[in-house]
Image (cartoon, rainbow, N blue to C red; front, side, top):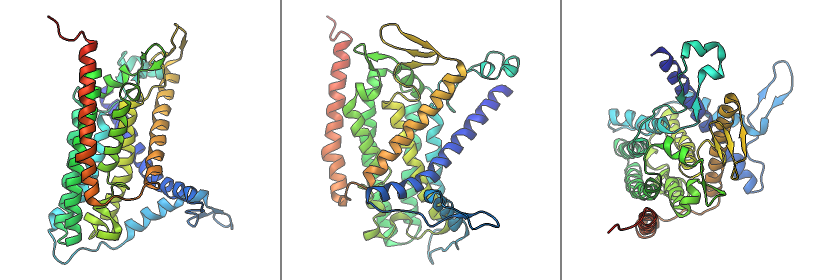
Length: 383
C-alpha cells in the first residue's frame, strides 16, 4: 500500500539521518570529552567566518568534524602497488553497510498512528498504525548478529587485499577478536531471550514497560545486571575500541587492516567505527534500558505502581519516546568514549585470553543460573 511505503521511507530517512548525525557528532564528542578528562582545551581551531565581518564562529570546535569530512573527500586516493583491486574497493563498504543495516530491526519509538498525529491525513491512512521500527521481524535479534558478523569479513578482506604485512596482521587480529567476542555477546543475550521468551526486539521493549517486585522497572539491566556488563564489554571489543583496539594499534601496526587506505575509503572505516558506537548504544538501550520508554511508560502515558496513571496525547507520547531513545543512546555513547580515554590498551594475547578464559565462562555461568531460575519460576519439574 502507498501509505505503508510512505511511512517506511520516512522511517528509513530518519534512521539514516540519525546515524549519520551521531557518526559526525561523536567525532567532536570524542575530542572534547577527552580534552575535558585531560584538563586541556581540545579542538578549537576550525571556524566559519561570517561574510564581510571579522566574527568567527568556533562553536566549541564543532566544525572540526566538518573539516575532517571535507579533507577526506578532497584527498588523493593512493593505492598500493600490488593489491587485489576488487576486494580492496569492496572491503570498506562490507564494513560500513552492515553497520547501517543492523539498525533496521531496532525499535526507536512505540506505536505511531499517523491519523491521530496529523488529523488531516486520518482518512487517507484509514486507522493504520505503525511500530516505529524499519523492519518488524520476529527474528530481530538474530538479524542483528547476522549483519554484524558481515563486518568481520570486511575487516579481514581489507587486510588481505592491501598486500601489506601490517594490514594482513591487523585483519587476522580483527577476525579472531571479533569472532571471539561475538560469541560472548550471543551468550549474554540468551539470558534475556529465556526471560522474555522472544527474539523480537520490539516485544522485548514492550515487556520492559512493566515492573519487577512492584516498584522496579522491568528493564533488562534489572533482570540481568551481570549480562548487561558482559554485553557492553564484548560489544566494545567487537567495535575494536580501546582497550581492545589491537587490530588498529597505531604503535604496532600503523593503522591495522586499513593501513593502505586513504581519502574517503579510510573515512568509511573510521565513520563506521563511530556509527557502530551509536549502534552498540542503541542495542544496549533496547535490550537493557527499556528502549524508547521511560520507567513505567507505555504507548498511552505513565502507569505508576499503586494505580496512579498519567494519560498523554498521542503526539506527546511519540515525541517523548523519540527524545528518550536519543538521550539514552547519547549517554551510552558518551560512556563508551569515557572508557576509551580511561583504560590502557591490552596486549593482544591478553585480549583473547580475556574473552575465552574470563568472559566466556562468566557468560556460561550467567546463562546456566538464568535457565535454572526461569525453570524454577515456571514450576520446575512436574511429576
